[in-house]
Figure (cartoon, rainbow, N blue to C red):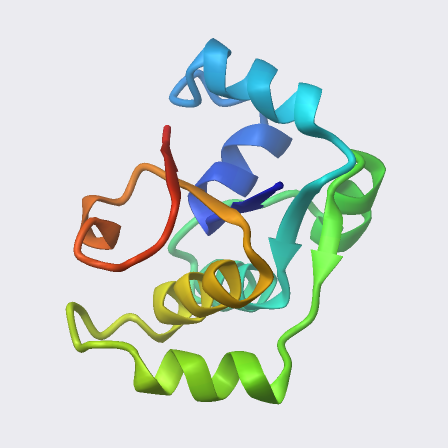
Length: 124
C-alpha cells in the first residue's frame, strides 16, 4: 500500500516523464491500494492558485478516475504530524509522513528531505 506525495500525484496524472516507468508500473500494479492525501490536494490547489504550477482542471475527479484512493486527514494524523522531529518545516510533507506512519503506507516520493524520517519510502 502506497501514499503518493504531491509531485508524484501530478506526474502520474500528467504522464510526466520524470516519473520512472518502473515506479509507474509498480503503482499501477498496486492499485487500488494507492492513496492520495487530502493534504496533497490542498498543497497543489494553493500552489496552482499562486501560479506556481499547472494542474489538471479537476484534480479530484482526475485523481478518482485514475483509481487512486482518497485519504482524509484525521485528528490523529494532525497530532502525529505536529510531534514529528523538525527535520524540515513543510507542513504538507510532515502530514504525509505522519499519515504514512499511522496508516502503514509506503510514501512514494523523490524528495530527499524525507530521508531523516522514520517512514517506509519508495524512491521515485
